[in-house]
View 1 (cartoon, rainbow, N blue to C red):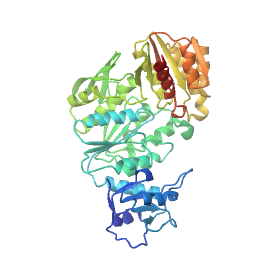
View 2: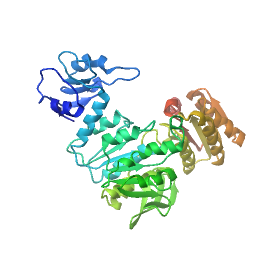
View 3: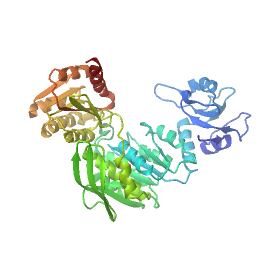
View 4: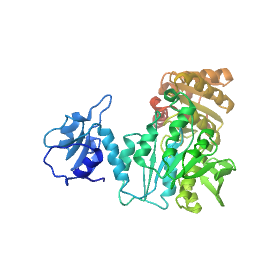
Length: 458
């Protein structure tokens, strides 16, 4: 729990309080959600397009809040209301102040794809040596990152935070709050290109993290990504490049694909060792190499790193292998962009199967580039030897149409998740392997749920 005295809150936020409470009064926690308020908490009255936290002040008080961060003019009786111009900024300031209480390495991870898996792998590797705090769920924005930092306690020895963005300046804002000593950039793809206009601008936004790495810190960069490679001149800190090409400081080579994972050889500085990763897809080797780089930078031995990665458990809806008796589903439904979609399409080939089948939803936030990128996916399916494709969503129709024109045997445009499953089940066959993927808004995991429900009824 992050505790603050009233004096600290006033000093850190520059807020004002005209009540009678002593400045030595202690708030035992900070929360933006009245549902998680505990006795003695400081409630932060955030506002958004569809809500106003000030409307919940009475509820926060009833649930045990001792005080609140509010905008001027929103003070209520019997609650220590500190008035600030921006409760969100004040929340972030308190998180940064709390982070500075701990002299521990903070590792920040960003990139167009793979950042969550990379973050989890880093946590697994560092967890061998340190007591680690990490970003949970998708708390990687201007509200979620402070929430993570405010969970730091004296027991923690390392902290790993994920940083998402939807525009220029947002990673800069998050890095100012977290003050990372280690920064990891996984790659630069086309996600959010609708908002940023080009990969060059996406790279510029991601590179804001590296600009905050101090001379005493370390930047971990993907050598094989031309945009990421160029970020090495943005910090005076140590640079560690990783990739599957030989000139990288941390390199992975001699990849051997197995039905239950990938085995590869890692060259790390002056050491060479084998790693088994219980996940499929070359892109996960990149994520593992980033984790190896962080581990080595923070003093974890190569033997312990290999052990941690060998025991790594994937996350739900992120290349989760689900067996249904006579066919197998690769559930990668959590999210999608052109880069991650292509990676998963290629990765499915690692699973043993007679026919490769794709059930795909829209890739969102591509703007004027949407049709082009969806058509590219259709052509890739044919190039990778897929037998069938089923699509859901307006943009995904271009995948089916392009795949059909490129020669795929079956291409069906579906109206719902159930329609997709019904269409496939009419021609299902033993030994099929199926990729399920799409952007979060398409809820493609419902396809897997439909399969599960059907299995129960049989």
